[in-house]
Structure formats: C-alpha cells, structure tokens
Image (cartoon, rainbow, N blue to C red; front, side, top):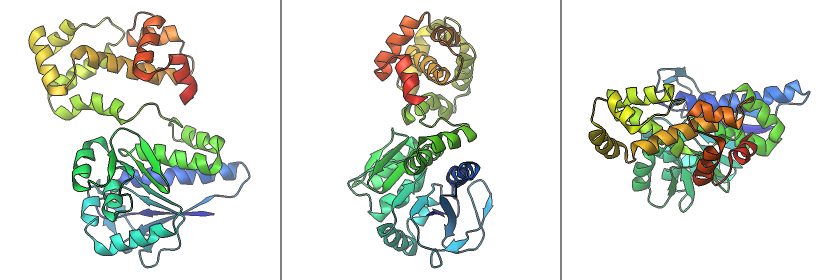
Length: 319
C-alpha cells in the first residue's frame, strides 16, 4: 500500500486538499468495487494536531504532526494564502527537505509551489503554479523554471500543478501511472472530470481576464457573448453592448485585455467547441451550429491553426 501524506496548515486552499483526498480515495473505492485491495493510505499531516482554519473557514485537524508522521511514499503540498507564511517556518522547511529524500513522489498543487521552490529542491527544474502567481514566484525564486501554462508538469520525483482544480488533473495522472488508465478513467467519471483535460492554463486565463478586470460592463459582455454564440456576432454588436462606438470599443478592449475583440470571440467559440467535442452525440455540424461557426471546414481550419490538429484528432486525443 502506498502511503500518501497531505500537508495542511492555516489558510490552506480547501479545494487543493479535498481534490487530492477525493482522487486517491475514489481510486480505492474503484479497486474495492473490482474485488481488489485499496492501494492508497492517506494521512493528513500538520505542524501539530491543533485545529486550524482553511482560507474558506473550514476547520481542519491533522492526524499526525511533523514529528509523529509515518514514512511516506508520496507527499502532497496543497496551496493557499498560508503557503508563503509557512515557507518562513524553518522547522517545516527542514522537515520537507529531509522527507523528500526517501519519498517516491512530491506533488505541489497551485501555490504549494512556493513551498517547493523555497526548499531549493527544484532549483533548475520546471515548476507549475497558478498563472496569476507565476511572475511573483519567478521573481522570488529565480533558480526555478516557473511554468504558468501547463496544467501540470513532472521532473523526476517532483510533480506540480497549476491553479486549484489542476491539482485534480495531476492526481488523476499519478493514479493512471500507478493503477492504469481504466481505474483513472473510472475516478474521472465519478468526479465528472476529463481524464486528460484539454489545453492548458492559458485557455482559462484569457477568458478570465475579463472577469478579473472588475469592469461590470465587460463582465456582462462576456455573459452576453456566451449566451449568443450561435449568432453571427460582429464587433459592432459587441460595442453596442458596452455603449461605446465601434472605434472606441476596439481601442479600449485591446488596451484592457491585450487582444482584439474578434480574437476574444474566436477564443470563446473554440473553447466551447473543444468542450462539445468531448461530449457524446455532438457531430461536427452540430458543434458548428452551437458555436456560431458557418461550416465544418471553417472549424477544421481554426483547429489546425490553434491546436495543430483536426477536431476529430482532438476528440481522439482526449476521449
């Protein structure tokens, strides 16, 4: 049995913890359902066993302190606002460095990358983190090769994922390595996830630029576009939604979001097309209708430009 230790600390991101627990726990359930023995033993490890609060207020208690923690095969380091503070804890950092020596895999999720970077264990190696924190992480730890695009990366025993739910992608990849694609697929289905989620962090970061901007008129524009993708939308239509002239709209949009409105609209259409390709019952013609692209030939051309493959090849790659 593989012992998986998951670190908790004050102001941890709860979804990073829960995602890992549910992935490895569900893998055990799938094995039991197939008449096999559980493969993972999960341990929650803290600086001590006193109660603490996650970022969202959830109260947590570790099963083991650093001193009482059993031998671990895998060590999972979730992210959270408290990660940067924990990096200054010399006792924890010493423990992390020592434990990594005889641990088969070390996994950081989201901003858990700050702890792995601070340890020096991944100097010169690629390290993924949430795209929003990549620049700060690189500035603080210039010896690390920060990756802000991939959902997760692997270098030897060190694994790291991008933002939050990408930690689930990472855990599914580890489960596939350990137990094979059938069990990993079963876990993904139970979690209503794709086993190999399409694309990288950039596809989520680009549409989110509008939401993160805080400008209500552009947030409403995005919502309107998503609700009307089936229609032949124009830049003039978009400008009307935010009460700007077409010329003003083009200038303001590019200044705010570093892309032309037409590029953004195409990104939304392609993102939806990618999602529909992974759903049963959607022909190429139906997908074109759903995303407002005139005909399958246009969609094929856009996929070749954006992803270097046809929609059919894309579907085979991720289904």
